[in-house]
Length: 485
Image 1 (cartoon, rainbow, N blue to C red):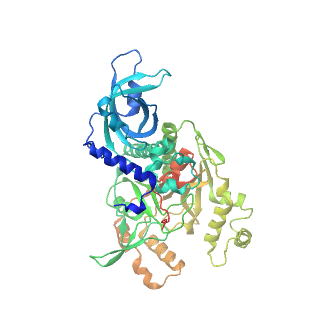
Image 2: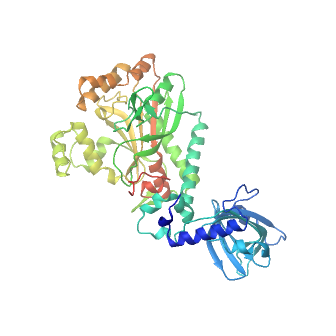
Image 3: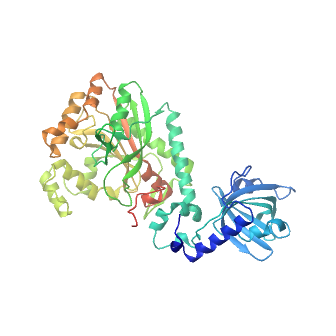
């Protein structure tokens, strides 16, 4: 409970009103309230020519104008707002309670629907029910605060104080629902795989470590669900997807949050070309269903989602924008050094990719499938039959950021084991680390995994793009923040 010395003057005044409400024999925290309809529903069904229409709504008070014997309230619920008209003449027996109601309180209201002289749809209230008394003064200009972190820390206020924030998150939920339906209609099963794993695998990232007391073992929060989803392919589930939370113990930025949402999709007997078609169709479905236009403003650039999308090789893009030949590693290292990349202890392929990220990504505004990556960058990917130095992989870039990553999946257990081994050695680990390789996954491949295409889509980043939002924290309800104290 809050200590008296910690209560500011405004909160104290609200607490005094709380006590007065209790003295009236009214529960300030309400209870069940039946038959309320969304505010938007009441607005939509109102017919000016029909008399006797009534409405029951519940929500939070976001605007209150007290002009003596008449009070106008703007009530907000998750669907929108509606005006309430409270007249002392109609509410004589509740007027003492009504005078104790303030901004931020949650109430229920029942009465006749009608228009004011200015044409504003209003519920002329005949009964008020207090559902929750607010003890903190709502911010007057919450959206305009200079400290935007306060909006992230107090999302519970941000959502009702700023309607556009509520709409953005409702759109996020609707888009994810569309993605699920899109895949289910195509015969994909939605599955769940472990979030705590004995081996952190499926991606190159630093994991979060936790400890299971009963088993006395360390576990890792998953960095990707990939290896478990592939086990399902082995088991005969030929089309699977998961909307999953992943955890990577890495930095924070406008495009990175350590806890983020991915959708991973695997299809037996497919390849990266089929996953390209699936990706383009899926995102085009989202744009068509949830966006006003195929052109969306994202930061300082306009993204045109018109189809077909460009497909271009990694090598072609590298040679064009890095101003050197990808096969001339000496020239590549020279360019990397000039770009302030510390390349001295990096493998050649890593230097190439760092330079690609530095020089190429900023040029990829409209949807672009970057295809055929250098093979050594892709230990989980099948190599091209026409050029074994290349991997059948694509990354989709939109608005200068990576949105999706896909492979023709590697299903040769020996090649997979050799690649894992090489990857561990390349990371500078000692021989004991081989015990931490996912030997069970290799064992699963020995039973036989069908040829397959795999795809991962960064949902948070995709929602950013489709809502024209440039900070990932604006599309995550509760982003990770450093504690205030």
